Length: 340
Picture 1 (cartoon, rainbow, N blue to C red):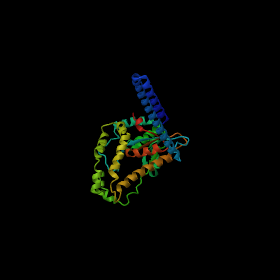
Picture 2 (cartoon, rainbow, N blue to C red):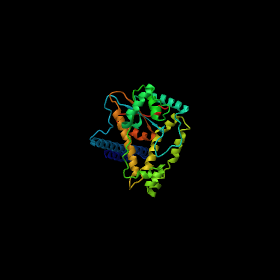
Picture 3 (cartoon, rainbow, N blue to C red):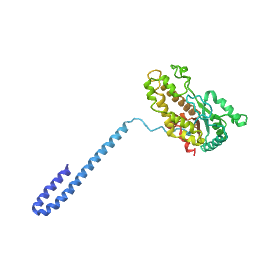
Picture 4 (spheres, rainbow, N blue to C red):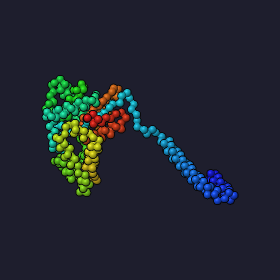
């Protein structure tokens, strides 16, 4: 306000001078006044913006001061933070999934065995200290380790066994000179007790399961996203690519997100408002994954340097990655950084 008063005072003084000095002085000083007015306006706007910025910063500071706790992620506390890497795979052997794959990867063929050797050399660069795979911990860990010790001594021949447990897990563990392997799965079978599972036991596709449990309206919603082309394409690509090329796709973050999205759009609505089969099924997938995470957590050694490698079905990668990334106790590595 003082600045405006001073400006007005100058203006009145100049009017007096104009009367004395004549027209030339008038025009020269009108130009000067315009420049001065523009300058004053800019100065006023600058002061206004400064005041707003100060108030905004102060409010932000006040808000942060009102938060009574530290909301930054926990920092790791311990001697050594384990590293974790997940190799998402398709199951080399027969599996009991509702979605049956049509194309056989012929894992035991000479060509595939050479490709597995290339894959193992790439994974070896990660320098894993423990190798874990999708087999039930309670039921199979001791059995698998008896087999592994026989494999090391030459008493157990894996040349006729297709499973990734043997073809990747056993062989890589031997290359790394490990004295044991680890089973980390924990399948929750006690779910959907209110659903007549026998009525859908013969179902050979997700669509049949959905049709048997959903209303027509629900099924129409589920059918908006046709996942079959993706499933068929991925199934056929196994025989058109090397294993390393195929695993790069299976373990790409966008593929993990997309395949997880197909479960969300394809299962969760099933039985909504009645038996909630789809939501319960999805919840049990998460229940299984968090059990797997808990097994890895339990097996990890925080007193020594650990580099953990999980070999597991690709549909588990997305959820497990979230658990390891947000946990302060693990450092996560992307497997595709090694599949080069």
